[in-house]
Image (cartoon, rainbow, N blue to C red):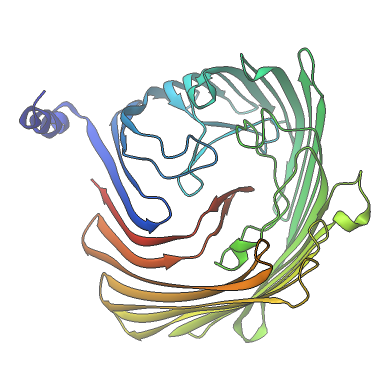
Length: 464
């Protein structure tokens, strides 16, 4: 089919009551130091009443590097395709799909481009919903895990006051073996307090170690103040492995929001870990907004020296024409013997109605058992919106790290300049050049390590 015929078919879709939506994302990196990649993803979506369908055309020449996928693999073709029918009672989908059961203890299949994770299934999903009961079942193949067969289901009853649910999962493959898991959960939602608890077990068919998982949370609001507490206890609960995973239990840790924070994160160990987190959000006098949290995690089979402790506080104030975050984070990693303090000043000011200036100032000091003197790092960045739709930015980071081979501390300076352009509706361009320090990108308790690189980056996003 030639290009003209394709455009003719797309243009005729409204005549048949069909609507077409789409997104195209192009990402390119030319690295003089590090790895290069070129990726383009075009997602097309067609809808007519209760029926919808979609596909993704994907090109990777080569792909970005990821620990979760093949290193810089090459691909060209249709990677996602699906069709679905949905009404108030039924939701049926065939083809590519994602799914989460409960809070992810047993199943959490998702896509996150920041993490370079695409844990999808190719198969079928059926969901049923009525006033007092919801149920869903899945069956599919995980092509990213050598075609492992995955099947499972979830049912939730809604009697008065409490929601009661049960989940079940079974996967098997030549390399993955045969494993099944289930969970039971209860959720009590009210206007001022919410309580949730879920218990799960994993059973390996044949040789292997069974496991258990427990997660509980509670939050309540009193006027302008909200409090939340979470608890976890996981033992031998990797469903598959640390990188090829089908589940993603809550980490009870706050995800990093800033660059230097992302250089030191806690890597959740589902093999054995207990932990908790207490968080508070509040509106205080003088227009102050506060977010504060305290979290700990440890392997209870070891002594207390392996405890990881994290304290976080963010004070925010909006002064109408300008605003600022004042952030402090304390980390004590008993396993590695590191104590880290991070200080951040992040904000913006409106100069005129269509011009603004934002800033990001970060400083971090780390005391480690492997070195006598503390390691110091800083980052300074600023972004100016010079006209409506055009922003220019610059940041420079200086990172101190221990070179264990040469037995000395090395300091690396990484300048980066970029431009963000959105002059045409539904189209945006981002261009950057320079050097970037490595770190971690985290979302939903999953982290991906990003290696440092020097070079040029281009990103173009279009929607239609």
